Structures are given as structure tokens and as C-alpha cells.
Image 1 (cartoon, rainbow, N blue to C red):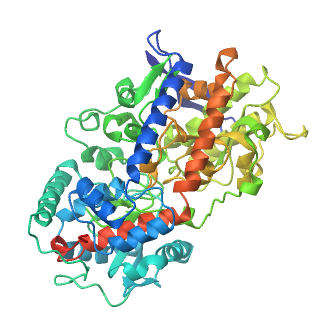
Image 2: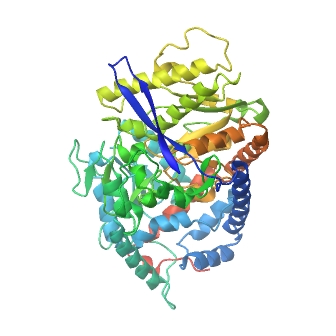
Image 3: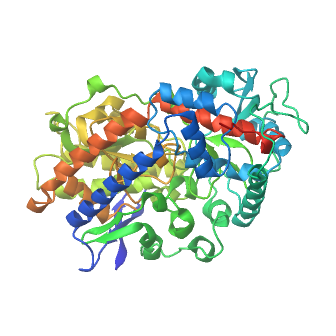
Length: 605
């Protein structure tokens, strides 16, 4: 049985206000596996799964092999200039040649839309500044970005330009609508998407007919809708497209996520109102029960929101987004990440390509030299705090649980095992919520700072409620610690990849997925964490940090091994050039889809 434990404390500085956070406390009977046994089984299965995946992901080494494998997997000829893509991939030692299912899945619905309609919808996205779309265009092999990009986001489009330039000469003319916001934008209702996908399959079937006349060069025959010869100057102000709505601070689950799910799903049939208990049926599909709490057994399924109606209140983006101008119509929107139910086309992030959160190996430490602690610094960017909604946000719940655990255990151990704090300023909140967040976060930070100061002998006024800016640390401070956790912000996390490249073990509690997820294996490259957190996560941390007693001694070796496996694979498959290889293939596929003659386009070897 599982239940929520209400943890309460007083915020006296803003009046007498009792604040209760809902912290999952899971209690299971003897039927659950021993945690150590569960970890053994999960990591062993992950190793087998990854070896199989890696083996099938790059079976081809010649154009003939790659073309044949493409047809076998996707039932189509590869797009024109596929030979140039293969040459680029092989020249840059890509460990993945054949497995690009993410691209196929992302683009499949657009086969169900007429190319001229796709082009018109692309142009529509540039008509309104309120949509925050960046226009990138390719003409005659040259990449250009719109002069109308806001200054705050120009770096992002310039990064995309640099990402594409090495292979732009092989791409057909196109305009790309790049989502400049962190949040994903598009969730199409299930019934509408089913019709679109059915039409897509019919369109692709035409191309698969024997004797089909195939051309090898994409010409982008714009018989129905020409690309504009100039950059679109968007309407300024708050003028909004009729296809979109502004959903700032608006609960998204019931208007965007649930409608995208099948009619028989929990998302469509059930609303979770009873916050005093855990929604066990929401967790069961992706979890394994252990003697100390549930663990994520299927990381991909854990990001599927169709069986998790309780997520309506347990994630900042879903419960109260800071910014979300969204639509329920299929638009060609390219985004850095998305949550379950959304259909944005995923593209590698300029943040990662530009190394905005850099990993410098010379600043990293060996595993033995790292502090055996869990470290996290971050801000409350995962949602807009209004009317107390922030108490359900994953970052707030994580920091509160860390505070509870650290202050309870500080008297039993000399070394602090947790170094977690909010840091920086608060801006995405109503005034009352800002005040409440500020005092609460400073209380937690001061409490944990006082509980254990590992690298400092200062003992001054650490228990005072210092401003959150006091707890800001350089990004490279992460490399001092063995255990790092990655949590969603307003969108996908820009620090996950540098974390993975380090010598630290990465725990990941995320609903957002990104382009690289299909090439990572949970429990082999990183540790998946349910965004509900709770006893299972903390027991897992105790196991990997050998804080759980003599029976957990193997935990350190498991942690070291997984950290190294993640590091080695990231260095091999998640490089900036791997982002370019992915984007090159994505845009070749896209160039065919937007061509009026797409059913006759392909590379035949």
C-alpha cells in the first residue's frame, strides 16, 4: 500500500502560514524484491538491451547496405542525397547508421498533410511575434536566419545556422520554424492524429508501389505554395493566431495531454483529485516494486502520460507553465524537447551544440576523488508559481525531500550526503507565491548548509536565512560530486548531456524527452527516477552511495560502472557532430515531405 505523508512547516516571516508539501512515502509488503536484487536485475537487463540495440543500430557500412536496411526498416526508399548523408556520418565515425526511428516517428504525421499545406502552415508561424518562432531558411545551399529574431534568442538561431552549414549544400530549399521557447507547443487530439496517420500511411503506400517512377533529386516543386522570397516581418504585440492559445499558468493536462491519449486510457477516463494517496495504478505500468519503494523499470513508459493522470499536479510545466502558446492543430514546429502527448518535431538543442553548460574534462575528478554526495543547484524555472501550485512542482518536492532527509540524518554521520539547494532569483511567480517560495527555499538551503559543510570549515552564520544568490555555484562544481540529479525545468534540461559526459553518476527525473533518448539505455547509462520521487529514489541513492549499511556495499561499484558506461557512450554518440548527423538526416527527410512530388522522390541503389 502507498500513502502520501504530509510534511508541514511554518513560514512565520510572512504571517503565520502553514505550508504542506505532498511527499510520497511508499510502503510495500514482502512481495517486493530486495532493492539490491532489483538493481542487479535492472542493470543486467539494461546491459543486454543496449548491446542488442547498439548492434542493430549500425549494421550498414556501404551505401548498398544502408539503402537496403532503410527500405527494410521503414518501407520506403531513402530520401535524395542519402548517399551524402551516409558519407558525412561515416566520415565522422557515427556509431549509429541505421536506427533513426525517432525521426521516422516525428515526421510520419506530416505525410498525411499535403506539402502545400505544410508550407502554408510554416509561413503562418512566422506571422505572429507572440508565437515566438524563429525563421531559418535554406536557399540554394545557403543558410540564413531572419533579421526579426529577438535579440535574446538570436544566439539560438545562429547556433542552428552553424549546425546546418556543413551540409546545407545537399539540402533542398526550405523554411524551418524553430520554437524559441523552452516549452513544447503542439498536442493533437488522439482521434485527429489517428486520421492524419492513416492518411500518412496511404500516401507512403503510393511510393511503395512496384514500378513507381522514382526521381533522385528533390526539387521542392512549389506548385501549391511558394516559399517567400523575403523574411516575414511578424505582427508585433499580443496579436494571436486563431490556431493558438496563450496558456500561461493554465493547467495543461486536461486540454492538451489527455485529449492526445487513447479513449480507454486513464488520462481520458480518470481525474486524480485525492492528493492524500498515491495513484498506484498510475505507477504500476512503468515500475518495479522493491522492499524499499518503487523503482522505474521502463523509462520510456514512465514518460508516457496517458496512464498518469496524477501528473496534472506534479510537474511545473503541466500544472502551471511559465509560457506556453500552444495549439491542437498539426503544425511543423521544431522544438528542443517535448513531453508525452505533444507532437513537436524534435531537433538537437542549440544550447548543447554551443556548450552553454560546458563540460571541461580537466576540471573533472576521478570517481575516488569525488565527494560521495548528491549535488544539485537550480532555480524554480519549472513552472509559474501561482496560488500555491509550486508546491507540486518536481523541483520543489525534490528540494523539500532532500531537506527532510539531510536534516534527519545529519546527526548520524560526520559527512553530509546531500548538497542540494535552490539558487538565484525568483521571477516566475505571483507576489505572494514569490514571498512564500523565497522564505521556504532559504529555510531549506540554510538548514542543509548547516547540516554539513564538507569542504569548508566556516561556521559563521550558516543558519541565517541568506539570500538564494548566496547558494549559486559555478557549473563546474558539479564535478566535485559522485551523484548528480537532472530535473526538468521549463523544458528539456540543458545539463543532462554534460552530466552524462562527466565521471559522475547521473540520476534523471524527467518527463521531457529529447532527440538523444532513443540512443540511451536507462540503468546502463544513467539511473531513471520517477518524478514522484519518494522512498524508492532515496533508498536507491543510499544504495549507490553505500549509505544503507553493509548489505549495500556493491552499490558503489554499480554506481561507478554505470557512470563510466554513460560517459563512454556520450563521448561516442552524443558529440556536437552527432547532433549534426541527426539534423542532416532529419532535414533530408523533411525536404522530401514538403516537396509536391514527394511520392516520386528517393535514392535507389
